[in-house]
Length: 341
Ligand SMILES: [Zn+2]
Image 1 (tube, rainbow, N blue to C red):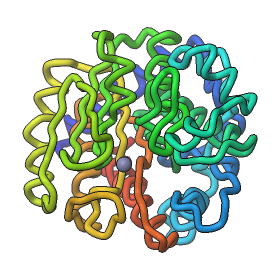
Image 2 (tube, helix red, strand yellow):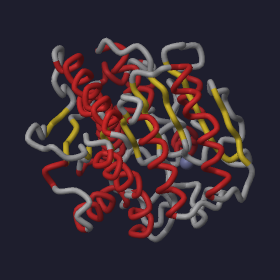
Image 3 (cartoon, rainbow, N blue to C red):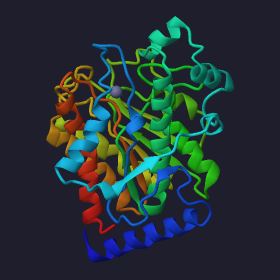
Image 4 (spheres, protein in one colour):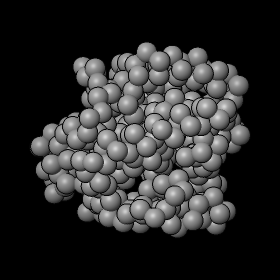
């Protein structure tokens, strides 16, 4: 990267900071790290809750992502920001009053619990709210600092009035709406590279020109009935690193140039990995790293802030999975360094 380019980025980041910072500073932070100069990592110990023994959702992965980032000295604890729990009012910018009321109070029918994949509990409600708060905070911090990552998030199958596929609240949609309603920002691009289509997000914004939804997903995978994103790229089973990366490269620069977003929300799901239990693609660790690096560097080098979330990833080996999820923060650290942020 040239020096001129680096200066350009700096100026943009500072400008972004002034605009939003002037009206409201880190409204959604429980723990604020003003002194930290490194890549902001948003995490909360309430990202997890108890599940029945042998439940197939790998709930224990969230604290392990942070654990590996600290252990491998990718980050220090000074870089960790804790989100506040979002109010019901904030969640209602996406979800219906009735759904929130029933979900928060545990008035959830058996069949609705089955569709979400989770038995209802107060812990589940708390966890989903903190996770959503984490994505909102990551977006807010990204607007000030240029780049931020949460260690959870990407619950893109949640619809306004029901949850589905391990997703109860649509954190990406809430974060996008929050930014548009509370800042001078006018356009948000959601880049969803989880192996499953971001159907809830696509539905929520289908008639909203201020949010562009871009989803690259495996055609023969959940959800069976797809929604229409602003741009859907559906790929076949068995896709490998090189072809996958070319697919992303074929669309992202053009989208940035034509839509001109003020913020990108990036769902860096690791379920396109070859060892994932639910994905059907064949990406390697290196392939995911190249993908994350490419997405964030392409966006940030144009002076556009990015907030990344970890998205889906499924394995019985929690540590292997958590390491895989930490790829996005490792790639973001490289972007942070190389772009002189
Ligand atoms: Zn997924």
